[in-house]
Image (tube, rainbow, N blue to C red; front, side, top):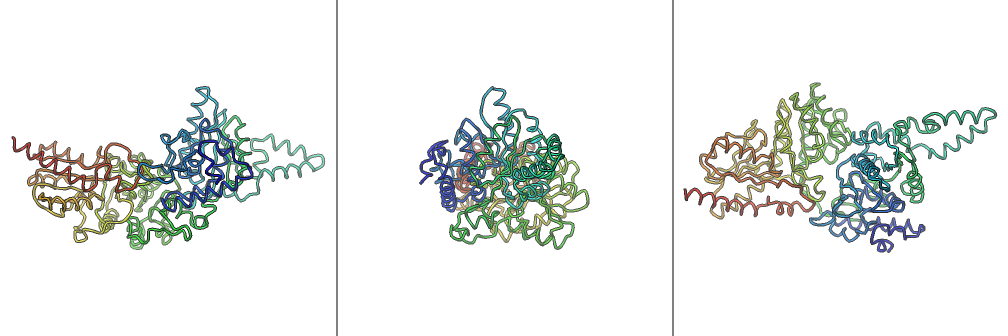
Length: 628
């Protein structure tokens, strides 16, 4: 196999050009076979095979630098830099990341994971290169979906001022995770569907030159204008008007054509954007037909493309989806907003049923939040569905545009807590802390699927900013008999016994129920309290439990710093309550990729670790008081 001959960076240059298509086919077969077992980002990688090969043929790695926007299309890059063996452990704990990682390879120039960052990072590398007097090429590869994010335009605005070479590759497949939306998408579609403008330009020049007496004068006059003949061929020439040289579009599956254009781009002493047209999922029919499904694919059957793990129980996202469609029917003021994730957040059904009340703003979380604030100020009930790690990008808008005005915007925060295989950039472990720091914000978390439904309905009636965080994956259907009405800022006491009280938030209620059973079997009776509210914390029930318990244990699937447990600890210390407090939370650190159950063991929030810590702490506290 040709792929077996690529053991280190630049080995692709030893492949004969006539065999490039064969190598591309081998890479696609390799990726399909591996990802069908491990899961991963398949569609984006299949579409970028030839593009990546062309970059590696033109560049000298690791001297030259490639920054992959988001980075979920970097699998071919990993293969071409000698990491074939790493695909056995792709996205597994301790194994190879699904995103670029500087600590993994010197050929990974910048760690990525979120959208629209590559142009900024690449511009920084360009400036560092020039200030240090170094000589290498910098290429930022960004998708058309990522070009809906405002940060990309901030970077383009600065890159336009360069008087030194910087190459931006626009990987245009008309998709992000879902189909692209907005003005830039329409603009690129015009370019995509036009004739190859270089050929058209030459033909136009030849035609004009043949006009007796006036032809050459017309051509010369057009060329003297800023946009020249390009303006006649591609309406607007957005990039050229900004001061960025535009080359393309070029077929993203024609390696030789791309190499030629990339080499031309490297000669230009300014910022150059090369527009490359690719097909997401290319070479695998199920991925071509269903690109959204194969964006982040679970293990699947290669022949059918269907998930290989069989039927699963309803997820929290599924529950949210069902509740939203019912709310849409009952309340015409309910509107839904997503940032390019209608499928991932469960809003697709709402969009189909109430298209006039559904808004996909593209990969633009900051805009999504302030847009929602405007909707709320206009008398509507906006529900913003965003993943926890993506909402981080809109912290200022939540604080400044929603909470200062105390506007009734509902944040449905999916993927809260540990999410697993996508790693540090996607773990939703900071939202309790960063949202709880904002005045006027209320933060809730359901213990099971029924409580998620109740909380959404409660939030619709609430007259202020409110966030509901819930985890990825299967919705817990235990504790069905415990469904006390939701009261603002009040916890739910599920079991009450003496001496140890477990205060669990959201997803950790399930774990706490298991911990309680284990401790009771060992002779340590426990109370179990479903916290419900991370903010405001129910201090009344804390005071009540302190009178009959000697150890309070808080459990949350978020970082300890600024979290729910610290609020309880502060209250106990402030009021000098005679009780010990043990906080079970995540460490102040980033959590790498891996199976969620394994990650919970590693960070110490699994049942067995929690039971050991509680017993040790309880005995220690009892001995201390006995001596006194």
